[in-house]
Amino acid sequence: MHPLIERAAAALAALVPAETVEIRGAWSRATRQVDGVDVVDALWRATVACAQRLAGLAFLQAGSALYWVKSPPASANLPFSLSLTTYADRAISSATFAAAIGRSFLPGVPVRCGPDLERACTLGPERAETGRAFAVAEIDHAAVFALLLPGALVKTGRNRLWHLRDSHAAALPADVRELLTRGRSGSVRD
Image (cartoon, rainbow, N blue to C red):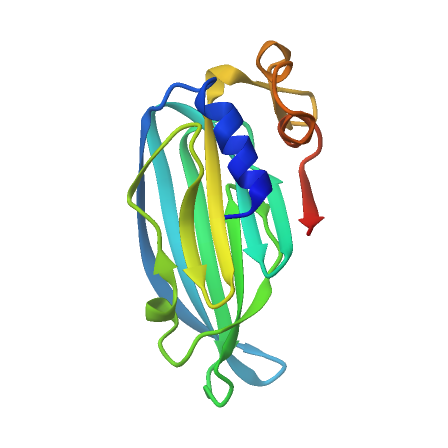
């Protein structure tokens, strides 16, 4: 796990009460044509449910790069999705791996996967806790993580962008505070 995710989770552990969240998802598969070539999309759609509304961050770690995106404002059932897209002829054992939290998308990265897309992707736990980072999925050199916050700890601005309430953000390390109070998405390189 990237050091920024670890620092954010450690800082939030004392601030955010650990509440169980359930991740319920399933794979589906579709074939489509792009410029006359058959393309296969394996899509994992999940709902993250909790006793209270949730907002969160999704992270994609690929090699030395870390990409992050904030979810839409807190909701009772936060959608999460993963996708693996490849050519149907399977002559190439690679795919594009991408993820989204709500309608907020992380970039796609190339991964090696073999012929069985769904089995190549290792899914994380079906239960997690608020304020604690957890793995959503891993494939090849890429991994998706999430960090979920109770809706009561965040405030949504006029652009429908949430941020951690000032009273909670003040004591956080500078890089974690910036992650949780500024911007909709970003990236970090080691």
